[in-house]
Image (cartoon, rainbow, N blue to C red):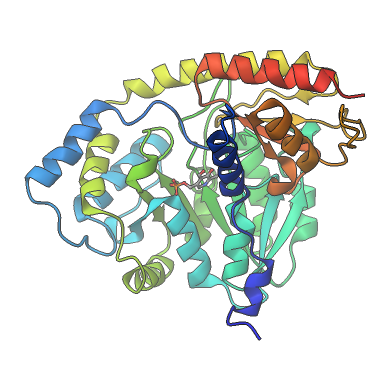
Amino acid sequence: MTIIAQHLNQVKASAISLITERANQLEREGRNIIRLSAGEPDFGTPDHIKIAGVKAIAEGKTQYPPVQGVFELREAICRKLKRDNGITYTPERIIVGCGCKQILFNAMAATLNPGDEVLLPTPYWISYPNMVGINRGVPVFINTLEKNQFKLTPEDLENAITPRTKWLFINSPGNPSGAVYSDAELKALACVLREHPHVWVLSDDIYEFMVYDQAKFCTMAQVAPDMKERILVVNGLSKAYGMTGWRVGYGAGPLELIKTMFKIQSQSTSGTSIISQWAAITALDGDHTFINANNENLKLRRDVVVSMLSDVEGLSCTPPEGAFYCYVSCKGIIGKRTPKGQIIASDLDLSNFLMDECGVAVVHGEAFGLSPYFRISFATKLELLKSGCRMIAEALRQLN
Ligand SMILES: Cc1ncc(COP(=O)(O)O)c(C=O)c1O
């Protein structure tokens, strides 16, 4: 007899937190671990945003927040959505939460009946299937192909839709794939969705500003405005503004959905810190030049990782067009034997080997639903990235 709810059996703790735990443990034992596993930029929050947070405290803006988010922040979000994405929302259609994560979770809690299906193209962000499972929905995985740059095709979408489908998740630029859907690709998916009016779109735009080369960010509500009443736009300040610890994310969508997410938030967290919310207004309305500078830096790091790992026998890596991850194929490594005689049978075996034997933390592809791959975050110092890639190359040369 257990007190734990049965449906939670299918829910897993985040693989990344388990990897971080393991890295911490090895470091406590005196090992030096190069961490290429975290989804966190290393730039930190720009000073003008930090100062806005300090000012909010000094001015006594330290009360409980309005559950839906500070009105002035919701106005700033509307300005941002108009300015950057060409989509019009009013503040009552915006909700602010503790990061995108809470917004995504609340959206699932607000909409899923037991057995409702949520379409997740693989590789997906680790939390998606678990958020669906916690809310008694059924994640339905649609495998993408590397040759299609890990993007969902209209045919595969059409084939996956059933009468129980409630949501399609689109995450562009994608974690872990780095895939960026073009305007034409989103329009092609919208054509399929128009035939299935019961399917809603959750557009997770958290990596919006991190795009490289010719890639151009666009979002479904912008390219298919006729579908706006069944789209939830989710975005936040964690990544581009270096504000992971401030916990500010938001959703923009139809009023009924926002009101239900409000209800859930009012009975759970009461919203995110009011101090963070005042700082977020400065972030959204203020200087953005640091984003381009950061992107130049990220692009350089991406190029180094792609080039170093592509030279390793058994690995290959499609250069990501966005976000800050390389999703590296390790197909050529599977089946090889380590110097201790262990067979590398999966990407999990490989990531364990890399952590234990060469001191580099990466995340195995199985955690993102598409194998055999591993994810490297390149939002870390160039010297660390170079050492990490060198150590991976060295360790893999010892396999046979
Ligand atoms: C695809 C994706 N969505 C959402 C989030 C959550 O971001 P936040 O810090 O806003 O909760 C992450 C964080 O890694 C992410 O990679």
